[in-house]
Amino acid sequence: MYNVIDEQNMVFDELPRNGCLINYSMLRDLKSTPIVFRSFSIKYVLEGCENYTINGNRFQVQNQHYLLANTHSAGAVEIDSEKIVKALCIDIAPNILSEVVASYLEPDCSIADQSLDRFFTTSDFFESFYPSHQTLLGKTLTTLGSELSNSPFEKHEFTKEFYYHLSEQLIADHIPIFKQLQSVRSVKMETKKELLRRVLRGKEYINSCYMLPLSIEQVAQECHLSEYHFFRLFKAVIGISPHQYLIRKRIENAHTLLLDKSHSVSDIAFLCGFSDVFSFSKAFKKHTGTSPSLLLK
Image (cartoon, rainbow, N blue to C red):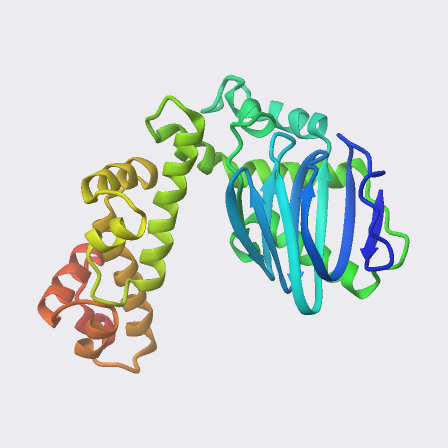
């Protein structure tokens, strides 16, 4: 089922529950409107921005990002834009998603129990949003969004196999997240999800500020956690300490700049957030096995 929703056609109540469908929307203004998650839902923004509140968490979903939530989610959406906001809402029937999940529950799989199915089909699911260029599902959404934008009012049809494909990508993208959530020690699932959000917020903060003088204490404060609590959670979820992750980001950037051969070693050390050339050279050789000056040559 495929629908176009614009300012002349805003019918939501008659859409089927627990089924598959795709809505292509073109809206400028939408007052805070309660959302009914009829199936497992993908909210993908092609152009503009949609503001969601899901289970008490706020998500500003901008162009080329998508939000995921299932039937146990509740919230609202709001659009306030001078230009038309173009977006896709894709519903995947829960039974299709469960059928695909079952293929991952083989005896030789590292997740050989029903907890993966529970993750996707109950309130355990981790509602969040993602940039489309970083995931398998996101790349398919980008292609689909471009095709529908070129001919939104044509009669588009989507087979069951299409939704199987989306489910496969969705599950593949989320197995690491599922494992990260399991690594957070807490009895209450909502507490697990909140702590995971804070760790991922810290990771993104490091990603955006690693070239600056940055302490792990600063990152922990950004996440509203004590430095030790953040250190322990980050290492459990990401697999390395936040300091190791920070150094790795700096070394990766330095390696790119060295291959570009447009900066000196001392300039690169400064650009990548190191306090001096000596600490940069030592860290670079430790992580790559070669000195930055040798790579520059």
